[in-house]
Image 1: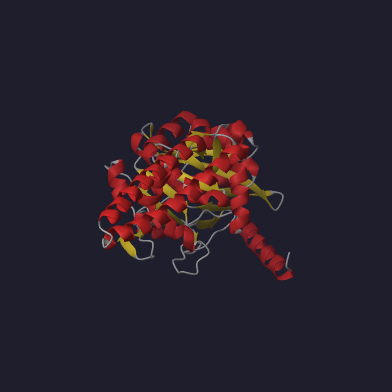
Image 2: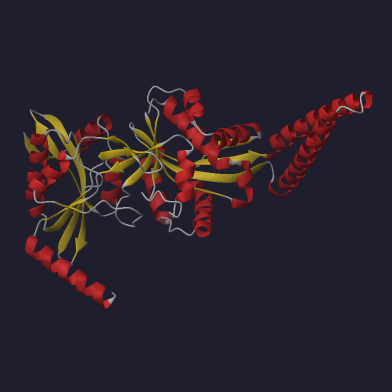
Length: 419
């Protein structure tokens, strides 16, 4: 058993056949290397069989030193201590030759499954990993919550699709999710997928949403470069309202209500004391007024925007292991069309159709209180009957201890000086 650099073919084959994050892919390797980031594919082999694989990036720090990061890796069976020991012993020696200051490892390993109230529903039984890392001189960076612009989020909201049909998934949702999905499907909403040349449509939705909800979005280059390199493994669905279809459906609803009102009126003419039919007339008349307003809105939108009205768009990574909802935005003026719900539903179906067992709603803060910054997002994801994966967190190891101690001291001074 030996630590070694891997060919792209070896790395790609192993990560496609073993559960891994979208950053541990051939596409991300090509993105990094073409962008000038020093990147290596390393792993462990035993009798020519790959037993561990990892994409490692090196970033300059302190002008002459480098920071190493494993990008949600390595991909391996962490319970196999021989593989673990071989990999990290070898990686440390490998990085010493690259003038690395320190190493950050953030395994894509779940320690607890929780519900969206934060309660542990399943202990994954892998806390031995902490001892494995400690024995190699790593320090755990803590059980963090919240969002960080650099460090990967430690909490994901995940829907398990194993052995489930679309009906199974729909039946497990709460009433609001079901109602909005059916509403979107009924009223002429369609989906198309944006290509690289159309990505500005998605970016506009994201910019509008980030400004409204006051969060910092990734820059244009992030989304553009990933779509360029991941190609069909990045999907950018756009939901639009077919306003002609919407108006036709709305008109049919109006015609149906008018007929029902007429029937109730006829019943009251025959029996003026029929209170049930009198109440029915009142209720149906209120519904009619609301739907007539919808039709008027639809006609105005058709005249202003043409047949297709874009209302929401999202950005997804697709691997053999999971469909990952990275980001999404919508037009607040048209949120009543429930476009964001249709995107989730269509992409859940995409995962099922392609035999992908995990639909990953991606990051949440890990703060489950009503005052959490993402409390609304947590409730949205909870409504789909998702669970929460709590990941093990980050481990840090100095590779050049004297230089790393100096680096830490300099950072403390900068923090005191406010720089």
